[in-house]
Image (cartoon, rainbow, N blue to C red):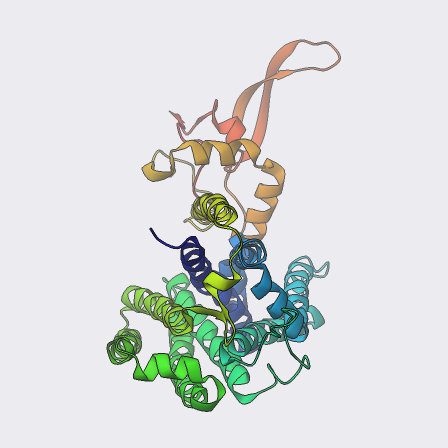
Length: 430
């Protein structure tokens, strides 16, 4: 029978990989927002905001899942990490809050002039750079093995600074920043499809970020020989080290080659595989330790029943959240008809989303808020005149009323005939 602690550990690393693929790319978007330049500077920042917009804050749910699993299933490890590394953790959380606040304040600037040169744009860009660095610093400090546990009282022995303010954790932080920038640039190449000039801009940035990621990763691996000896032994001297290094290097070079050959979809897949490989290597290199050199996953685990319950409940929640995020992405990042284009039967939700989740999303969505948000992100929405029965509150009589509605008004579209055809979808893809 599998050890429940190891099952939870696998879930933790899966959540960490998903957070890197989603939240890491959002941080990278902030990096490229800071370095937007040239005659298409405004267009670059507009594309970044459009790409981040739909689920920019929902991405942090994966980091929350990691924290909750550590707190519930590995309390001694959570106590050691949160105590010894509270300074970089606090800086990271401040960065997350400032980044989200700046993104919103910049988007709702009353003058409509907020961009990367606006004070809120600067806050957004700087916090997008600091936050992934601090996250990498925390991971590097945990892996380094500089968080010993006092056997007498079970508390971590630390001066609160030396464990994370060291070459190896800092290099891990910059590697995480470079990897996030690479992810974001590759994603943005895909988002800019149809605009060859913007694609060329972000393709160039992706190649630069790819080279920077390789250099940072190599420097980090060299620094691990003295800064994280347990990880060094696993990544260099173990039986799986050489095949893993060859596979990771091949995927990285293939991704850069695909970018240069303008095979953007293939490049995106390869970069995502690279991220998963990096997180997998980190996990394999740490096993069986959760906080080296004194705490293993098994030793730090709570009673098995609580671990199984926590893993089952939070794992199920993870699947539901993932499904909800997919629905949100499909709803807010599809193709929108032109301003004067009328709805036809071709503009409907794809069959895979005609499920209970789409119906649930339809019921709980606040239509005016959704319409306003989509209007800001995607531009003016097509509207239609529909004939709808209306009940007068004073006379309590029903009468006809013509109403202009946006295409996101799902409740009206259930019973409306638009362009001579009845819409049978609960949620229309924008």
